[in-house]
Length: 393
Ligand SMILES: *Cc1c(COP(=O)(O)O)cnc(C)c1O
Image (cartoon, rainbow, N blue to C red; front, side, top):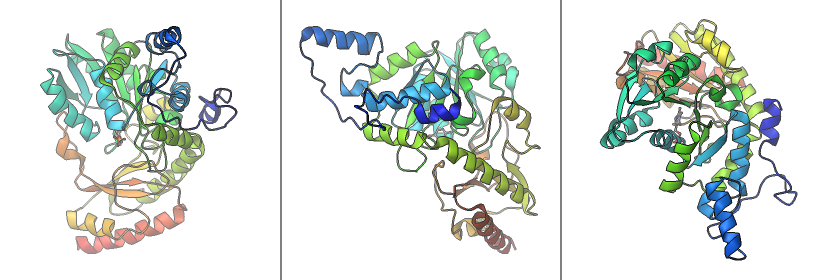
């Protein structure tokens, strides 16, 4: 099946759902059994064999299975686990691969709350983190220690947009027995499948493009056979579960992922090219641009680019960026992205970098290009630059 067909049909099981097209929301805690023998069969199937078999609400229902099966089909995964946020997908997949005394290598471009988890909680559990230049590629081999168990990638970084050479990083990690976890939120599995590039785990903050409507928090962890046992054990033991309403919303969003992302891509490219011609703009960070430093690897490993991009200026001040952002009509100020509407937020990624200094002057801005008419968006941005220039003086 091609990916557009998987987006529409992945995980569908009309027989399991009495003919209903969208798997209904099963609200469940207790599942009752006909007798002791049936209870034993359910335990064996659901827990030991990891089959889609009702056992207890926390262990999943058909609402969860539909999303899990659809995501596994798209990611090319052995299985997909569901968590209550993208951040928990990042932190729990790391926890499922390490123990006290281990070391992990983390990209310097990582989502900041993932970084905070590593520097605080993970550290107190006796797991050490060192940060590497996201563009290092095969060079991570030199940073591997005997106790390195995970190399974590995020390609591209959600503020700095470096594309990482996942095949080269995976080769270096696997040579030393480490697993590779990739946060694939920017591209979604529609435009990139890290497991096919050599990663062992592909994470989505499904909150973003999978849900697609800014109304639910969901994380997905797609795993290959190597990463499956550790993460399955961690999640089962710790008792994490995704609420069924959120699983339903994620599946519902997923069915239109292809058409939405193709439009995000088309509009974001128009905006990126327009921004590049603005005299105020020093650089537009968008890997689909031919002169982006990550373009060659992006072209090799991705089949498209989403709606999120970074903009940094020749001259900038906090006041100028504030004047621009505060007056926007179609770009509300807010965190997260991946919904149907455009968003803007200030960007100052340099303050958390430790492996490699960030060269751009701060603050810049980050734009999510939504599904509005792109001419309206450009008009709003042009007015924003007028305010920016006036405040800059
Ligand atoms: C938003 C985001 C997350 C966290 O997802 P939440 O659902 O907001 O917890 C993780 N990684 C990346 C790259 C993100 O953009």
